Amino acid sequence: MTNQNMGIDRRIRKTKKTLKASLISLMQRKDFREISITDIVELADLNRGTFYKHYQYKEELLEEVMEDVIADLIISYREPYKHVDVFTINELTASVIKIFEHVANFADIYTLVLKSNALPTLHDRICEELKKLPLEDLEDYRPNPKINKELASSYQAYAILGMIIEWVHTGFEYSADYMAEQLLEIITNKPVDAVYKISNTFKEGGQE
Image (cartoon, rainbow, N blue to C red; front, side, top):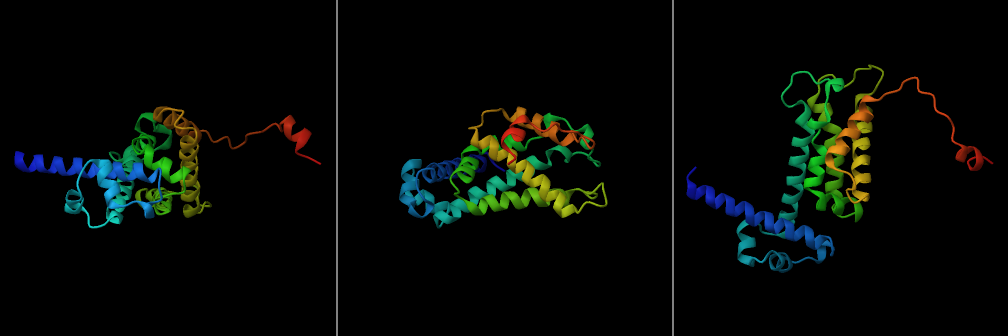
């Protein structure tokens, strides 16, 4: 690729990134149906001709935004085992868990999805990816033969999604590194014979 072509590619990526950021910003204030292409290009400080060089409709721009999120989600999820033949949970370190870095990089979009009920299609796709990735990537994703692997992958997917939702609702109070450390602690701490003391709050107010 020539330097000229590389320069063109960089400009295209920059233009698309600006248009996407403009759309997401507008969606934080308005329903997608109410957003016009004029709104998008004015906020992006571009002209309509520039928009139409890359997209026919605003729906195409939105679809590309969602594809960007899903593609990066897949890469970040696979990070802990992309260079190994065998994936051992007990040897996992927090530093290779990248899914929370992914969420932080797309913080505006995750906030939009989880706080405003916007982009329901993207919400569903995130759930589906989190469920299917371990089933597709890990050959023996069921160390206990009594466990249904589809149910196990759903359990894990919604557990991770639950952490992401809580993180978003706290306004990203914790760092991505802290969230990765917490996930690692949770998945490696499996007290099979744990005994729990019933709280006084339940004893006093939880029973009639």
